[in-house]
Length: 228
Picture: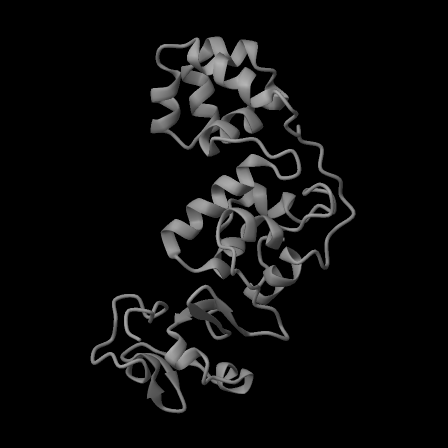
């Protein structure tokens, strides 16, 4: 499950190739956010602890009183809903939180799937992980990037926001490109992108960063959006 390629994550995120395993986690209900916020405010230290950690178990180990009044099956939804600032009955709060966090780190939407924590990589494969017919793609469009498009086997370069994301098969990575280059590349061009450890990403013998107007190899060869 955790060894999927970027295009395979794209297929999964659009609702294809899911397993028949059912999600058994708690789903937030109307009124939960108000109740949970009140519970959090009962502790003089809980908000500070929550702001300081991304580890649910660490939070409850430090806030022992809350660990007793919040049923353990609700811990994850309680913690990540409060981190998000809202509840979402049709989408587990941890997925939203981690998707936003990963996107903030990399700035490349098609890296969200490969970079998910191991436990979420398994759960997102469940046929009913998202409720009401939603898919991971729907959730990312709603809460992370409204112009998100998935890279799949049949679409190895896609326009996301004001840039393009293209699949680099050699390293199973994604390169972000400015529109000046992205709109010129065909699927066959993308299939020919290779990695050169002196010049970065190359296409037909020419460094991609040079095609984007960059004179030097960037520190991150997978993000070439710095020039337009």
